[in-house]
Length: 202
Image (tube, rainbow, N blue to C red; front, side, top):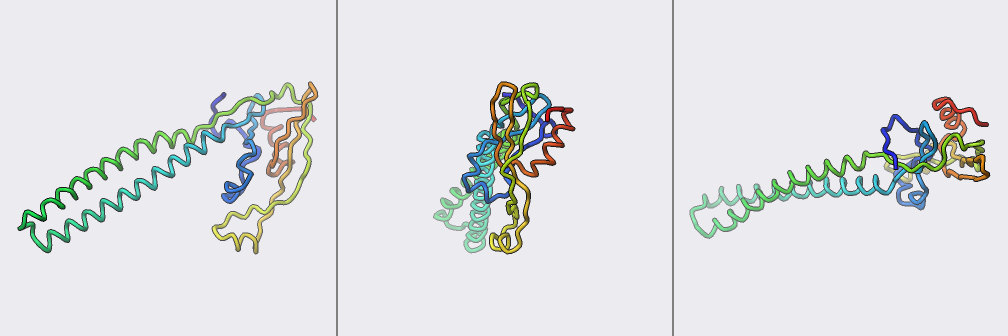
């Protein structure tokens, strides 16, 4: 596995909309072009880090709401009773404990979230084929797909935004055909990759 920065690679077949995360598209391998060849990226690790970060963010929000609710409850009790009766001390002490636990939990979750956030932003991939082994790249199955990514599905259907999507067939000098599905803007992306990495195959 090789680790990358974003500026070192060209992602070939990214997901076009958030809705594709709920389709079979998530099972299509993610490929990227780098200076020495084409890599299959480790999407599972990034997705795991993203989901963990999202879960931690939700946990922080829930703990914050609990803390606010307990503070509101304690202030309400204090205004009504002034803590003149010992019977009110027990829920007060419990409330203080909940607040302290919530604050500690939020601090802990923030630290854990930073760690998973770094994982979500890491890019790593496995070399599939080096440029020296590529004989040619043929583009097939070119079609127009609706890539509208608005919050409203109905609006996306009524007012679609189309983008050209195609499949790369990477033909190697030893006769292999490596298929990269769902490359967006396939012709322009191929020209860009060839110019950026100074490639001269057909």
